[in-house]
Image (tube, rainbow, N blue to C red; front, side, top):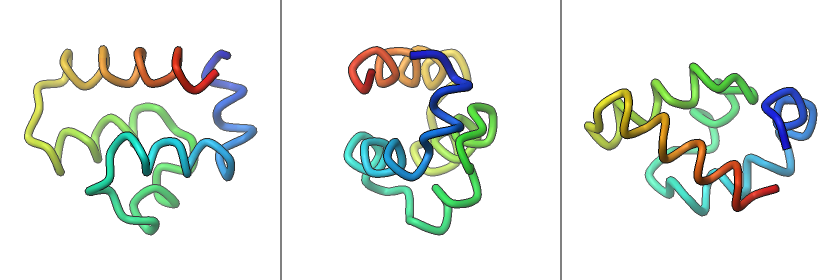
Length: 66
C-alpha cells in the first residue's frame, strides 16, 4: 500500500492509526486527514520522538496495515 492509498482510505486507516498511537485523539487524526507529514508531526508532538524514529515507525505501521 502506498501513501496515496492511505489518503484515499483514511477513514478505515484512522482506526488502525488509533490502535498504533492510542494517545492521538480522533480530532488529531481528523486533522492529519491521511497526510503523512501531519501524522508524523502529531506523533512527534505527542510522544516526544525524533523525526527519523517516527518516520521508521510510520513505515512499519504502513507495512502492517496493508
